[in-house]
Length: 261
Image (cartoon, rainbow, N blue to C red; front, side, top):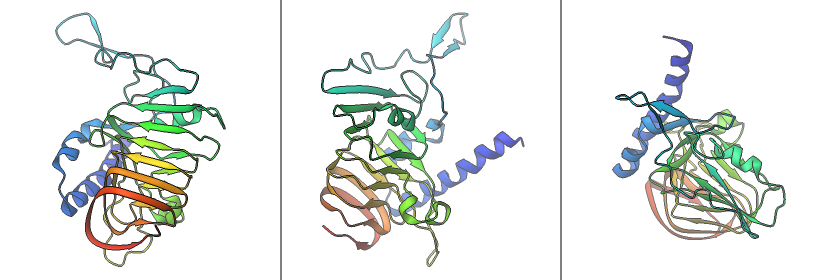
């Protein structure tokens, strides 16, 4: 087997493991059907022009972006800027982190990062210098950002988050955040695996999914609002010192939380 195949297999194994473990906690067939292994995207660090492929029955080129939603991204306004992420390369960026990096520091405008359906396998960090960002997915069952760090691999639970937000006024809509580290064995050390760490003030999550095993959602500090979200995990599946309001759906194997509301 080639080195490239081995690398791909090593990434697929933990993904399959967490899918199996989450399904055993509480089945959600719609989510796992939509985010099949064939939809997984491994991020690259460059932009793409609209790619083409040969149609099997003709000699004409057919764009894989022909079904891309028209008018995306919409034009900027005086108060709002728009960026677009698509794993096929059909708009501005192919990874979410690229789009975050492109947002000007300390801008007062709202920047909406429109994220097309797909599975974005990358670790994302929104620094304090980039407030007023929105992650706009297409559905929490079809758009996801995921990584597989643990407290052991990241040198601490606080640093294991697949997505870490330190900026204020962050908003996420219709998107899932996942940590793909396998379900830990009882008593395992360093197995904490955060899907989302939110440390900025005045954050809002609507229609989002949070998937993991141990320590799924790190509601670290600040004031946050969660509406119509789905949170799945087991030990300490929500923890932190934030002051937050939850109007959500929760799925757990057993409860052991240390929350401060």
